[in-house]
Amino acid sequence: MINRKVFILLMTAIAIQAVLPNGASLYAKDPEILLTEEQAIHQIFNGIAEIKSDSHTLQADQWQKLNELLKREYNSYLEKDLDSKFNFFIGFSVSGEVSHYALIDVVPGKWGPITYIIGITPEGKVKDLAVMNYLEKRGRPVKERRFLDQFVNKSSSDPLKLQKDIKAISGATISSRGMANGIKKALALVDIFYIKKRTL
Image (tube, rainbow, N blue to C red; front, side, top):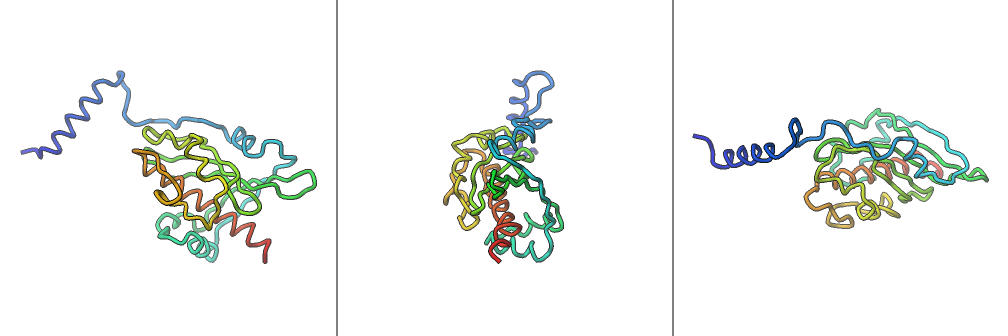
């Protein structure tokens, strides 16, 4: 005999599918493009005199340092980053000084990957960020300023944890956590590849 809970879930799914347009799905098949790479870089570096690209590969000792900077159980999340290449953008002022850094990265959302860009100051604080594309349904508000502005001026020393210094989107905890974790990682990477090196 079919379990009552399973039966209710099946009936609910059938009812929802019935009201969807013919051929439509509950799940997005293609990401919604909010910003192209060119548009995203322009938004982060608007008015900057010069922009250069710079790549770094995360070595074993840097991976260990990344775990130490994050100060939480990130091992499974970060394991895929070992030996990975990260492509940064660096903005320079007219005088040749670093204005800020930027990184395009991908984090897990509830419905699929979320691609975003983050700008980080030479002091290691979030300057600006924007969602570039996603497959979200309930987590669509991750693109909105009321969510993203929570991260502005945060650094790798801040908790960046849901229900601590970041308010999650209602009904989209997974996507909210994915963004918070990714931003924490991006800040730590800039610390490792640029800021800490300058202070040595």
